[in-house]
Image 1 (cartoon, helix red, strand yellow):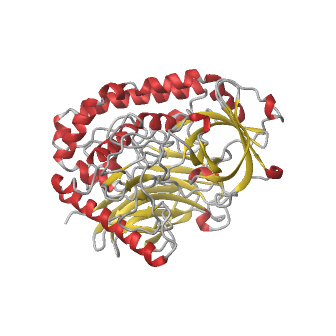
Image 2 (cartoon, helix red, strand yellow):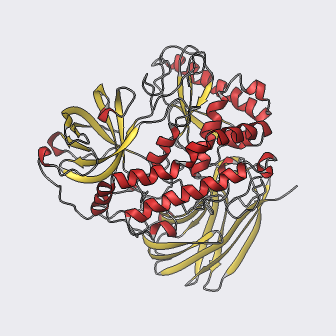
Length: 592
């Protein structure tokens, strides 16, 4: 939804390296019909995509030509066989059977009249890792109430058919791009200062990217085709953001207001903290600057792993405690804007005032979950006839969520989680501890820069090839146990990965963990780059037996790196038929 946009200031995902942690069921589901006029409709609108010659949509780079039809709530066609093109979209969701899609029309459209105006590109988000199918929709609707953020993507749930085959419930959503009806800033590809810029802070940045401190950014709008002008454009916006970031770090509110729309920073922090977004600093953190305007934050984007739906980082499933990635700038998943802002008493005061002003709207958030679920109940349930995923481990959701066997249990869980979260945050934000800059985690322990880096790192079993066959269980003391049937061919095919932590050149770190294997095996480990070319900083090999052993060593960092990983390689046939346990993992920076 497009909201206020001042004249002078017009205008996170991490994801996981696994290619096959736990897949969706591939059962077939007969299409309700092979004829567009015969679709069986429940409460939701229907979107039907039919590709030319029934071509399969199998690329996230190349568009496939298609015709799209849309049936509204009343069962009437809003459009029929409109020419378009479609491709896959997403990061971790690319490995799910239930794919997400991006649609591009030749002429602007306002699908189901949900937007504030027309646009050429739209998203169909599968929410394949969210058993409630409601997390993204809930956040986008809540973001509409945060008028410090000028725009929130308009969306609604629909049922999707692709080439006459039923695909389930999807979130039809506006794409994040520059448009007078979306992010309404100027777009002059051959201008530098007189141009608007849409920027994403992302660890996946590829093109038109730049680094500031520990974060990587990518310009998302079209830039000049002339390389020299493009270089000037990237240099201009990167220098502006760097000045804004430096002003934030210095703590001078008056100076900061010269560069940043503080209302947007306050609101986007509140939006991310309520839902305890695990991707806060990894990916999908957007900001924009209009020609002659200040840096603004938004829109909010990508929350399927939020609201308790991730067990890869200790405590993230809990509605208690602050998101450590908003407090501690010690991790590649950390959001440095939030970390530095929250260290300032004046910013915390702004958050408290804003929270209390929004209290009535915030309190109503759980009710919006229940209302949406009950209003469209039959359609949501039909999704799970197509995808047999309830009551199973689908991705990285905690055991409490994977045990939920019905859609009703999922939406009630989400509503309850939000209700408890809001009550906890309301009490803490109005406490003396928050005023004094004291933040606690899920168990009430104060978050400090001396925290165990692996306690706030995503810990995963990585199944890096399709032939790997194993099961795993997260352990309560920062670790996991794996039962490996087939580890693949190469040592890297199966890995235990604790990723995203930062190291500083010359600093010393104490690495420790407990380990065992049901059969005697050599256990290789490595601290390395968490990105290509995966260069190592430390490596070793231990003899693992069925008797638990403890390992501890001091490592001096040979370089500074904002995105590292601790890797145990368990692939090849070495560990086939064995159970491996790695527990009590710790990496702590030694005090000087």
